Length: 328
Ligand SMILES: [Zn+2]
Image (cartoon, rainbow, N blue to C red; front, side):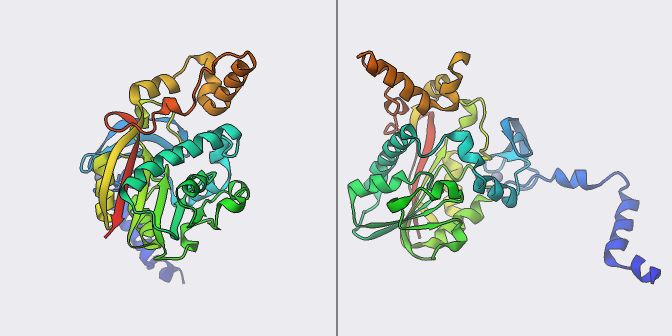
């Protein structure tokens, strides 16, 4: 019986492997760095240490083939799914249903819709799916534009989706639960910087969209340049990379440009003086407090929370990247 055990494929390969490469083990295997966008292997360089702390990520790597910057090691899908279902994300960013954040999200949704409606015909009865929908304010903004629509949401965090009420027609926890070939428009607001396999991810989103339907993508643009911590972001997009992703997944890009606050202003915003720590951790809450205080004193409000984000301004070094593409 012992002889049979030694002859197993696993036992044999282990012995051969160990005798030829006595010092090569799994640590070298770990160093195989594969670009999650263009899949080139070990054709990359260290770009920086990972700014912040997220799972096991400790470096930012830049692919020398397609220029995508990504966190290393990239977390596994399972780790990411657990993280986003757990409520940890919204603990970190902000309570998505706080009054300040709702107000901000609605203004941002309106700004995104202004851009989308320049390129997409908003037909009556249109079907839209918002993936990573957060507080679902896109629905409120859409209602002002056209009240004949179906707005479905994918949101893994049940503490968030439990509060949707009438905002959302159908709620799903994951993309695999959604009906395929259904939607006129899929929205990915601040989502693609959180996934470890963007080609597989956008392909699965594409399956939900009808032929000639659209996808709207909104991601941070080079946020490692203006934020002390980028966690939990793991992919860092530029125009070239987004266009490559679109091409790989069967989309034709109609618009792709930077938007929002210029990097210089964003850097001042995110690296404020230390006594304004609250402003960094929760700018909406902070600004509401100050505005309320000034309102009581009958002074003009010092902050227009939204206006400083210059959300309808485009081109150059700005904080976001917006992209509209059609399924071909
Ligand atoms: Zn690459």
